[in-house]
Length: 211
Image (cartoon, rainbow, N blue to C red):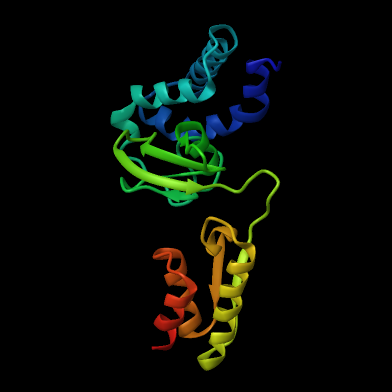
């Protein structure tokens, strides 16, 4: 296992120095001492994982809870503040957002449904949230559904999808096979929106698009 001090000094120390520089100067603190304190904290967390049997997620949650009054007022438009590593992928009612990795770490897998997770509280501000999200399986790539055509020709796409769902004969809607839907023209775009927001069947979509 890697020495946590070596990991910090080779991968994170320089970024930490840049990150705390202005704050340390404004508080008349020594940048190197602040950075050394961060390094000592990381070594301590590593010891809790190695010798105390605690998971990284449990340690991270406790750290977030300890500084709740500071974390809860922060937000970012692209970086997951819970891990500071990945891009944002899931928006929460509280105004924060998290990445897939943090959803797995802080959420609970939904029984009987593969790669779906339930999150009941924001790991950043601890407020109650209601998020159920599906993640891509490890062996899967992103799947797109593209609906082409416009006007009366759109009936062909709808008919094809209805027959496809009958042929597959699976106990869940056809849209569950796809991660994203793309459509051209107002009819097609409207069909895709209806398909993912209200989960209607193809026959109802047919009426909705062409009425």
